[in-house]
Amino acid sequence: MKGHIHLDRLQAEANLASNSHCTPTSLAQWQTTAADLRAKLQHKLRIQPIPDALQIEFHQTIPCDGYEIRTLSFCASKDIRVTAHLFVPQGKGPFPAVLNLHGHWLEGKTAARVQARGHILAKNGFVVLTVDSPGAGERCAGNRAEGYHGAFPGASLFLTGDSLLAWQVRDNQRALDVLESFSFVDSSKIGATGASGGGNQTMWLAALDDRIKAAVPVTSVGSFAAYVTRRNCICETLPNGLALSEEWAVLGLIAPRPLLILNSLTDQSGFGVTSYCFTCARIQKIYDLWSATDSFRHKLLDEPHGYGDPMLQAMLGWMNFWLRGAASNQPQALPEWTALPQEILLCYPHGQCPSSYNFNANRITLADRVLTHEPRSPHETVRELAFLVGWKEPGNPAPWIRKNPLKNGLIQAETLSPRAIPIPLVLQEPSSKEPVKKVCLILSNEGKASAFVSREWQHHAHENSVLLSFDFPGVGELKWEEDSVENTTLHDTARACLWLGYSLLGEWAEVIASICTQLSQLYPGAKIEVIAEREAALAALLSSAIRPAPFRHITEHGLPESLTSWLRQNAGSIAAIIPGFLEWGDLTLLRKLATHLPAGENKTPHRQEIQQ
Image: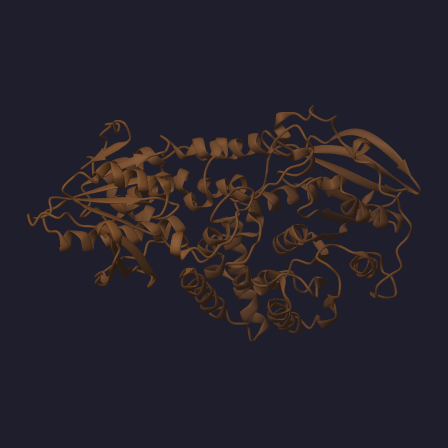
């Protein structure tokens, strides 16, 4: 197995990109860099004023000891609503407030460990707003108040040019609008906190919205380079993020506002000690440039991943100091509190939450907003497609290295991909001495040993042709990812490529183009037939569209008429994700480019076969 070669290359690329971002040497330099970074992030995350009214609806009020909990919902954007809890202390106020952002706890706002911050802060005189993140709690995909928003469902948003990360930021900014709308909230004193995925949300919100006056991200800070090839959620993924920035710079956008980072000493490597120290050291330099050294603190705690009592104590002391004017910012003793049952905390009874809160319905709403395309020239269309996939021109392919023959006349071989990964191949040449007239390139997203390849190989074995198959990077002999996420394969492999500014599918397409060039040189004049299934078929189409020669014929298996069907049905793999692909044009346009039809030609491929 050679998967470690692909893994090592991705990590090396990540480290190189990370080291290209230099810490500032003056405040003026940082302010220029920060303004540029913030503007780019706001554009990338589609952050803009929302004209829709908040449409706040209160559902019930639950009295507690010294405070009350109001269940409410509000409008995030057209046809998308958010369920939430509002903890309100007794008294007139105005009170300081904290936006409480949950991580990957399926119950969302009702989980006991998420409730904890609301109860504790309310007992200390804070208004607390806890919102359900897209895909969690009452905003799940089904009738149960549980669900996971990552894997392919969350990744499918990339196809529209959007992202789950961006969606969370926009929802959380609307949550700040909600807090500001209440007369009993002091809008000049709003903080934010959360753990894990909630800590990640805290970072992005505080970095992009100055209304957050104190931030406490918990068990979430590492480095973007450390996220590459590690297991993180799609909601923590920013396509081409490492070309744009490193995590220390995003957190540096919070300066000089108060920032407390709390991490676990024993956390996984993405949030591990090494990446945590790398990031915090650089944040400290930015706060020093602002002469705001006391506004930044970071602590490693010998606690498991989550928001345990030591984290709660440190957060409470920090918020009391910066938002309530307490004498010390040190950890503070926690008041007694009792978690309430999930059933009484829901805005709607089980199974009765309207579709405007449903994760799948919301994803389709967001997708439908971009599925219109302006006409442009074929050249411009191909150039845009190459940019989307992060295309690396194959150039002159490396020669094949022949290996030992296998049984049944099969031959092992190997070639280098355009990104310098050794690609293992297996081929069978005809026994006839006559010139080869046909080459069948049989491809599967599960590798050359898949059932699909075996079946197609047998189907074409009687032909007097060359049969060839190979393993894509991340697949077969090149596999390095051990298990799937929510039945989604190639999760970490595809995520790694996205962070680095290209798609795994684009890398596969580059390999196809390179090997087809080699085939045309080895067997001059032979017809090359590419027979491929699902994601491999999509890679073949991409390769033919971007680098036409020497394709002759593509036969698809299992690829839909439109990728919107995979988005709507949650039926795809993250390997199929090309950020902005549906915004660019979808499969109908891709098939036209792959067959090199004239502009405006409306011919539809017949039986999913594409003929040049």
